[in-house]
Image (tube, rainbow, N blue to C red):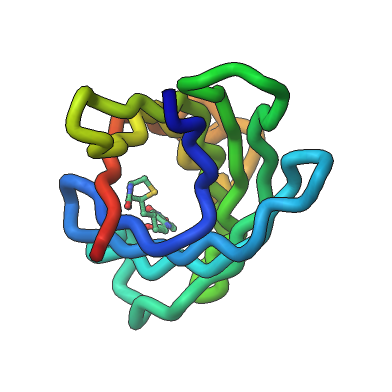
Length: 123
Ligand SMILES: O=C(CCCC[C@@H]1SC[C@@H]2NC(=O)N[C@@H]21)Nc1ccc([N+](=O)[O-])cc1
């Protein structure tokens, strides 16, 4: 069954778009992320991502990637798995952790949020 290689353009349920570059032999990739939403007043800018996926001979590989937001001091890590349905349609089922900069250690407890996103390919 088709193995899911992450190279290409994806959109998630929030309307965010990402472009993943070529995945090398070790499964490493980089790309660009344009979030449709943010929790900061600053204008949203395209942000770099780096990650890796399993490329050994398994279908439905797992992966992870980190987005270093270029418009605010915060970082998101996504982790998930690619699924391909019987028609060859691929979806990325992910969970994420968003870490924002805490003003002080006292605010550390509230600085990480968690959520889920599903991505599908943009043809
Ligand atoms: O807002 C941000 C950076 C943008 C985060 C977008 C998230 S990533 C998980 C989810 N999936 C997406 O596609 N988009 C969202 N940083 C930020 C947030 C809050 C504060 N703050 O001070 O409250 C500072 C920076």
